[in-house]
Length: 139
Image 1 (spheres, one colour):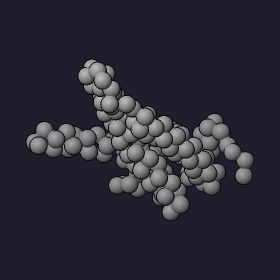
Image 2 (cartoon, helix red, strand yellow; image 1 turned 90 degrees about the vertical axis):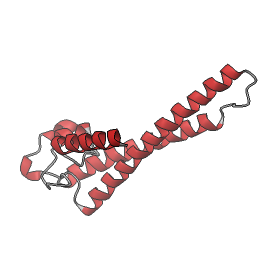
Image 3 (spheres, one colour; image 1 turned 45 degrees about the horizontal axis):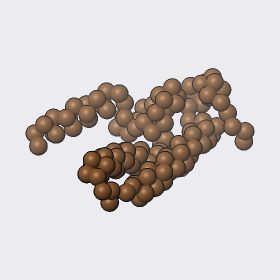
């Protein structure tokens, strides 16, 4: 099956939502994202592994440690995104991709093009973030 473009995808009727072509499009998109992310993770791990923390100068050592902390933070965020991508690929396999987790309503092609790992509606995600902020303030 030939690869379709975004315009063709968006031009499909709403009644064809999450048809075979659309699922294939998002599967390919997610796999490309996953491959890019894996390459970035490998590069980040290499950067951490090659950092010389045994530098003689305290300022150089502090700078290298700060750079390592930044690489670790980015690596952590990329690992979270990698798990979301994997979960989205699993949803494609089981047929639940493209629908909100809580309501089961269609997410929509426009939103999936922007965030192919979307699982929650804007409202539900905002509510979840408010709860997380309130919880973190109490800690």
